[in-house]
Image (cartoon, rainbow over all chains, first blue to last red; front, side, top):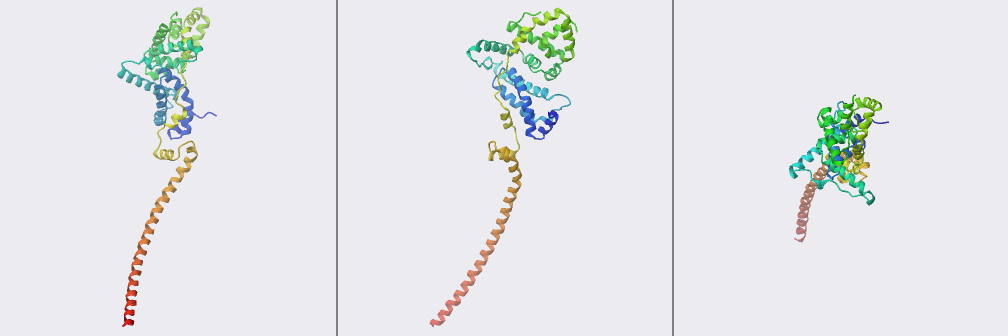
Amino acid sequence: MEVDEAELIKQSVAGDESAYQLLLEKHLPSLSSYVLRMMANTAEADDIIQETFIRLWTRGNKFNPGTARLTTWLHNIAHNLCIDYFRKQYRFAGHFSEQEVSETPGPEENLSHQGLVKNIQEAMMSLPERQRSAIIMCHYQGLSNRDAAVILDVSVDALESLMARGRKKLRKLLGSDNEH
Amino acid sequence: MNIDRFIRIMEAYGTDEDNWPRDERLAAKQLLQSSDECVAILKSYRSLDALLNDYLPRRPVVSTRQILDSLPRPLVDRIINWLIPGPIENLWRPLMAGSLPLVLGVIIGTSASGEIFNFEASQSAVNWEDEIYLLALDDSAFSTGLDNEQE
């Protein structure tokens, strides 16, 4: 029988580590996927994933199950931590350094595929953060347009504009600009 | 749903119908089934989605255990973790936590007993002083007796 997530959050806030662990195991894969794509698989992504879940432990009492799903709330925290990180990067380096994009060469037979993945990763990283985040949330994370709009603090129409502009740029960068 | 809105959905959400807005999904699918133009539009947008689907994230380095270990905990828990590190901590944690009042009671009790013991010791020291004083008196009486015999 699946335990009610709201009940698990209550127990977790009260300090029940086993309840917290159940929440962690449920949401870690999805959150990791979001942060790693937002951060181009860099090492800092792991720090942000960890910090997101520490906040679930320390500030879980601020989550209101009546107004949002836990996954939306966690994505919101992770998104803000990513944005904070990028802002610091801009402040100190002027722009997101291309050297920070993870380069993990795979086996020789996968080189062409790795190259393709690297191209997509670089194209994604060239998008403004909000466009990138909007595309990742709606294309990969399975979040609804309303949830994504709440996280980005925009209307659904504005969210669609962000995604349309982002996708247009990706098509141009990746050479798949043969659309209608 | 009309073709303009369908194109807008392709531009923003892509060709995977699972990603389309929930409240417009059915209407968009119905339009797609009835319109060859929509089918052509959908095909023309498909290549980007195929590319995006190839972008998989690496496995995260951070694990469930690492996150659990990094959680801020109360001072008592940290002391227990420091005293008994390793996996057995979970087994002994309730026992240690339960025995803490007992340990504190023993410490307080022992220190209270120590004071009584010291008090007794000091009393016996006073008694010894009396004993020595009395012995000294006896000794002088004894030596006085000897002197008398010599005389």
